[in-house]
Each structure stands twice: as C-alpha cells, then as structure tokens.
Length: 261
Length: 261
DNA sequence: CAGGCATACTCGTATAGACGAGTGGGCAAG
DNA sequence: CTTGCCCACTCGTCTATACGAGTATGCCTG
Image (cartoon, rainbow over all chains, first blue to last red; front, side):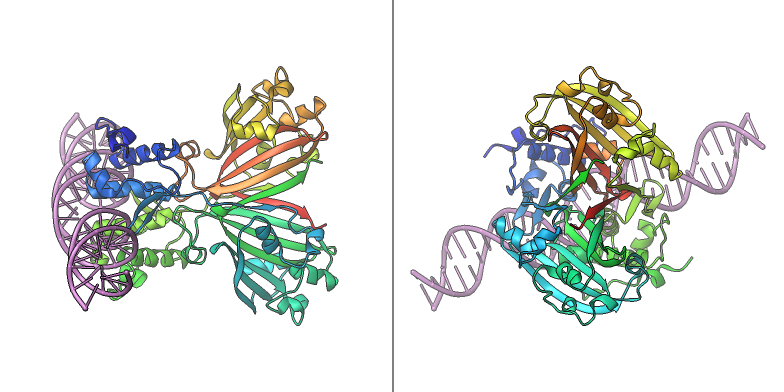
C-alpha cells in the first residue's frame, strides 16, 4: 500500500483553516483524484491520528464533514468507505403517457426489469383518511380522501415512497380502493371511470430528509431527498389525484421534455 | 420564558438511543410543534448542558444533527437558531416560452421584480474554452465552446449559479459572445440567427453541494443543491445550447406542466 | 474437521478540560 | 453624550481518556 504521507500531505499550522477541515480537504481531494476509489476503505481513525499527530476527535470531525457531504460513510466495526454512487433511475416526463398504460405491468416494474434490476413494491396501505390542508387545497377543498401508500425498492434497496390521494367521491367502491388497482394502474381506472386525464402538474423540491424518511428509505447520511408532488387534472379541469413522492436523491435523475413554443 | 424542563423533557437512561440523539429528538420535536419559531434562538449549549446533565460535546453533537438536517444553524458568538425557510422562487416549465422572450428584461429580473424582491446578476464571465466530455457529448461532439457564467442573487442572497455552453460555430462573433446578450436573452439571439428552437430537455438531480458551491452560493449547512442541466434543440434536431445550473435547494420549487396524452 | 471463543481492530458515545474568537451590553473615562 | 474598553456569554476547535459495540480472524478445543 502507498504510504499515507504521499497520499495526504501534512497539516499547515500557519493556515487559519481549522485542522479538521484541512484533513477533510486532503481526504476529499484524494477521493476526487481517484486515489481512493468508490467503495474503497479510507485510512482508519487510528492511522490518521498517527499520520497527522492530532487527537481522535479531530479526525472524527473530519470524517463527519465528508459524510455530511455524502462523500463517505462509516460502517461500525469495519471502517470508513468512499460512498459508491448507486445506479440512478431515470424518470422521463412522458412516463405517464397514455401509451405506457396499455401494458399490463406498472411503469416501475417494466422499467426496472428492462434495466436488469430486481424491482419490488411493498408496504401497501390503502385507506380513507382526513385530507391535510395542503392536499385538500390541491384537490379542491375535499375533506376526506383515499390514500394509497407504497414503497418502491430496487435490488432490495428502498428508493422511493409515494402516497396517492384521491377524492372519495371518485375512488370509493372502485378498484382504485383495492390494494391492486389492476393493469395500467389507477390512471387507467380513472379514465375507465370517465375521468379523462388532461395534464399533470409536478412540483419539485429538494431537502434533507426527516428522520422518518431516513428510516423508510434507509438513507445514508449526506443524501438529500427529492420531493415531488404531482397533481393530475381531467379534461374538465378538476384535480382527480395528488401523488406525493419522496425519492432518495442519489438514486434518481428526473428528465423533462419541454416544447419551446 | 418557559422553563427548559417543560419544553424539552428528560433523557431516558434505559433507552438504547444515544443521549445526543435523544436531545436532538427533543429539540426537533419542539421545533416541529412550534415551541421554537423560525429564526428564534434555541437554548445555549451551556443551558442544555445544565438541563440534561451531560457534557458540552454531547450537546454540540445534538446540534450538529439538527444543522445537518437543515433545521438549525449556529451563529458564532450569538447562539443556535431555528433556520428560517427563505422565500422560494418558483420556476415554471414555461419560463422559456417564446412569448416570455418578447419582453426586454430577462426572465429572472421580471419575475423577481413582480415578487417584490431585489434581483441581481453578477460575476459575468464570457469566454471560449475546451468542452468537458459531458458537455461535448450533449452538444454533439464539439471540441470548444463559448461559456457564459453568471450568478443570480435575490435580495442580496446568491440563489443560483449557471453556465451556458454554446458551440463556437454558432456563437462566435455574435451578440451571444457579448457580456450583455440583449433583450430576450440568448434564446432570442439564437432564433434571430436562424436557429429556431424546437424543444428543451431538462435533467434534474439533487445532491449535497461541493465546497466550491458552498462558497459561491453561501450555503448554510444542511442545504442541498438542485442541479439542472438543460439542453436546447433547434427544429433541425441540433443541440444549440447546454445550460448547467446549480440552485440552492431551499430557495426553489420547480414546477412542470405535462400533457397526459 | 467444525464450532466456538479470544482477540485485535474498527467506529460509536461520552466525559472533562482548555483556549480561541465573535457578539453585545454596561460601565467608565473623556 | 459619546467613545472606548472590559466582561460575560456565545459557539469553534482541540486534547486526552474511557468504555462500549460491531467485525473479522485465527487459534484452540472438542
């Protein structure tokens, strides 16, 4: 193995940059230059303590900078590793186009199969509940809604958690209220019920996850979430569904095609 | 002031949840419930040390959890404060529609003025440079490009940093290569030059910022960035511009309108 | 040979103390 | 009254130490 000094350099005691930041800089630069590759183990705390001649807390402070940036992650009992960039799922803006609903399976399953990954959908929950203020506003002042919650996994890793909200007068008693909405998903059912879809509106935010989201998506530290809220409108201009989706940001690229007119 | 005990409760020594996480939980819950409002000062480290009977590093550890989540931020010499949610800028998917180019001022300025904020654009840089591999691939194997860099500020706060790349054979010697591209921006110039725009493609990612981005956008810790890469295509299917934009995620909501067909 | 245990190495949590530096209020000198 | 200094309070950085808990390896025992 290459010696640490040649990989990492030394602390500059004259610099007014904090020691732990200098160490973080060294490590970050080494990672950026490929001296440490994805998934590879970084020097242990003890090794860095000896190399730099600082206390262990200082080294840990440096690591916490890197993990906060999403560059590294610690594994108890093993070491600190360069965080590998997971394969990303591309969400195209035409993923809800009518032609895609013809196929029996859901878009998520079809696409993942095509990409050679193993898709799963779990923690189905379908129930009626009180609409939050936000959902109510988006759906046009409804009081109670049907909520369909599900979590999507790719090769065993949770990547997305989504909840669809539908007005009760549309969904109650239909197949939409069943755990399995049938081929083409709920959008196909909505159209069969006479709610012809006209357009979608998607709102996108990015933020750090709440603790519950960290658990549900098993997020590593330093990984933000993409929060997408999609509202589906029928040809009469009525909002017929709101879908609230939280995605692990390191697993997604969203892609939109827009006319220039 | 309400006493700390009533606001925050106590450590559960039988729990196997780490003490600093329990303290973080207490503070987070108090913030969520509105016991501490936006911009308000949290109890000082010393106060929490006394209240919980733990060491200062443990309290600091708790704070670092909250700042990592983007819920709080520390100000040296003053205290730790609940991070206020800044006003967000809404980017509509039709913001580059032809009709918006008629007006003289740039979209950013017009929109910000309308929202009552004070917009600024700075650090103009326009120069020819070698295309990165990625940019070259997106523009169709060009070697050198014209790069237009600028930073956008709202009420003095940097919120966005953008670079437009254009093939030299299109941009060289035109007003596009000037610092001020004129009314309607470079898209208006491209159309005047005969490159009629057909559609845009936008790719969206979210991630934690690199250190240089933290500096450029003066990002608080716990704030991710939205990385948007837009490619503009003309009616002949040629990519005529790639715009690479990094936005402070807490300042933006992206909004897209999609046909359901 | 197989299973289990000891051990060494890893990171996780917590303590106690020291000094530095930014902030703001009050007091004293001009 | 104004200026300037001091001080108290704040967070920032760093050291040194201790113990706990997860992991991997190799040896020892049965």
